Length: 244
Ligand code: GLP
Image (cartoon, rainbow, N blue to C red; front, side, top):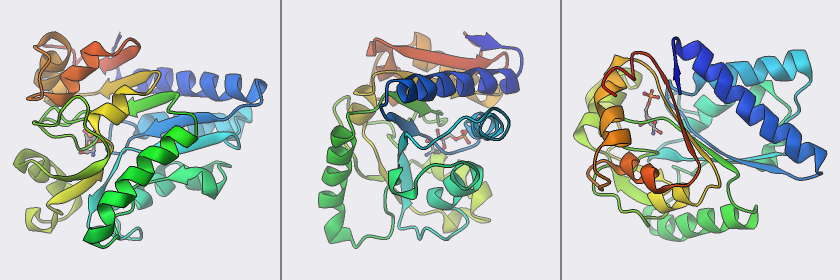
């Protein structure tokens, strides 16, 4: 779906999330959301906060799993995805803290493998992801699944692509301060979500969006695997859509 402005697209996505949360609430169930960081979902989170404040949307029945985190990364650092999520959403709504899951960038390396397996199990025990929100990186990554990530990849420690490090430099003052690695849900983890919403705004995403939506399905563009998912919405503004 192509919106003239990113703002309108973000509001549309927020209302999809809000509908799901309310529907689950009415059934006495939890809504299990896979959440993303980066600039793409910020407008969605702003609208969700507005719905919470002005229309009484409650997050008490919401369980969240974030896609990824830099490694190593302390939660109180400004660039951490823990910091981002609290600042952009969690601190402004009534989500119970125990319902929030974000990959832990502080673990010693020897514990990472086990931790990643547990992250997968926690998602399953919660009933699986009802809806996964995604942005896209210019390498075609979803989460931090860089080119070469396979269709069945699970939560794991990955190396960041050089282009991703360049793009992240704006948040870290200097490129050399960007962590070289990250923890990320796998493509397989994402593909298990019952529904997926991919957002892309701005002409910087036009080329990779065209390859994602119309190109060959290949691990060279991990986001292209989404073509094989039965319930994906791609929400873009006119600038990101210009090469479609
Ligand atoms: C980071 C995140 C991705 C995100 C991407 C795009 O790499 N790990 O999940 O999709 O950035 O960021 P933006 O939305 O700022 O363009």
